[in-house]
Amino acid sequence: TLPFIAVGFGGDDGWRYAITIASVLAIVYGVIYYFNVSNTPKGSTYFKPKKSGAMEVSSLGNLILYIVMNIPLYLALALLTWKLSPTKMGLISLETSWAVYVALIAMFGVQLVKIWHVNAEIIKNPVPEQHRYKFKQVAILDWAYLVTFGTELAVVSVLAMFYVDWFELPKITAALLAGVYPFINLFARPGGGWISDKIGRKLTLMITFSGIAVSFLALGNVDKETWSITWVVGLTILGGIFSKAGSGAIFAMVPLIQRRLTGQIAGMVGAFGNVGAVMFLTVNTLVEYDEFFMIIGIVSIIVLALIVLFLDEPKGHMTEVLDDGTVEIIKLN
Image (cartoon, rainbow, N blue to C red; front, side, top):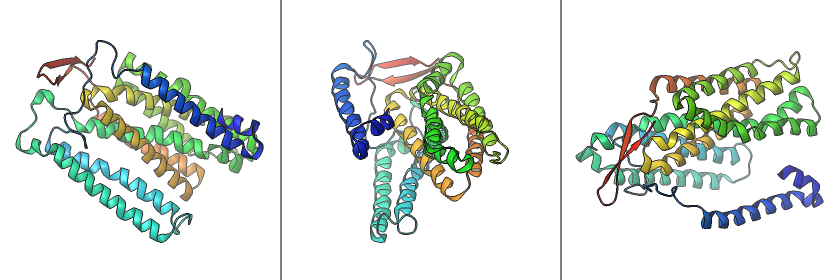
């Protein structure tokens, strides 16, 4: 609704009205949410991490993988800084750019210290088998969300101009057609979660990633001279349905990895979606639109292979220890 508000009210200041209305609604809803929502459904147990500052892992190998998976988060911020620097857009000075780079290195160093502080004990005292989880599950979901949500953000950012540049559509028509892409989120993302509940998490992800790969590889072969705009719009919508359903399927699995770490795992997975957006949008500035779509399709195939080969379907039970020492067994499937 925001573009319609921006166009319909306030003239040249319409964008200010749109942003202000969204902000006020967010504040009001924040108050409503605070007074009406609890941490868990009534009768359920609220689990939280034993330590704060970094995610708990279960083994030395998982610790190394966790450290490695933090690197793309900082690289994405460094890439954004480079794009704003005098080398590219020139919106910030060279001195500011270097200051940001140094700050990112320092922040990563602090993060390493926190990771070690939280997990140093596992080197001396291995985590009991019943309390372990596989961090590879988190890592694969990170890369999966990099594709699904990263694709959502990147494609919606370039779609209207793609229609204008390649098919010479009027800008208003192109914007309306591009607006269909985020709109399908209303049913595709919850649909992905619902299907996951019905047929299984891993199978749903395999289906959605196969759909993403096929859709975007097809878009990678678009010929602006011979392809019908109808087919192109249809393919972008189809790719959007699969990518958004994939996002829902990913978060259907997040709470089933380690209950007390659900918030931290969700936060890390969500952050990788923005890493994907930065990566894909940077690629878009370097290549043509068809190559941009093709790269999304190729990356989707790589992540699909990770899902097929290494992702484990949640099954059986997980155990959590309450503050009073009571062990609670949680059924996963």
